[in-house]
Length: 82
Image (tube, rainbow, N blue to C red; front, side, top):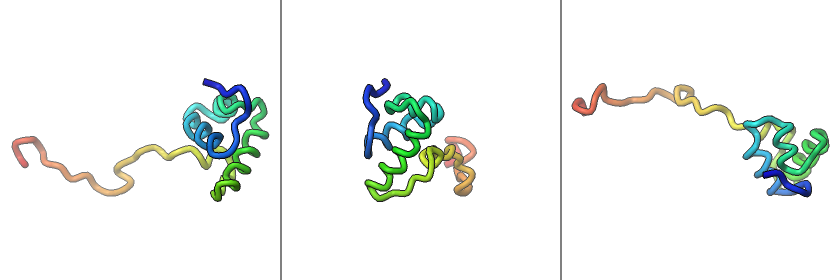
């Protein structure tokens, strides 16, 4: 659901992060911004306000969950080989 008024502060950051998989245009619109540049400026200001550095919308996109990146998964070959 899109916001009728532009969000600010932590609400803006939460909304942007939740909509980040859909792209910057969709996230901006759902957070109440029609201008992507104004949206990114508001994100930087919101980050500064709560003490985190947000350089751009891309900073909010979570990396894909890749379990192999963090080590080796160890498991039995079957349930009977515990």
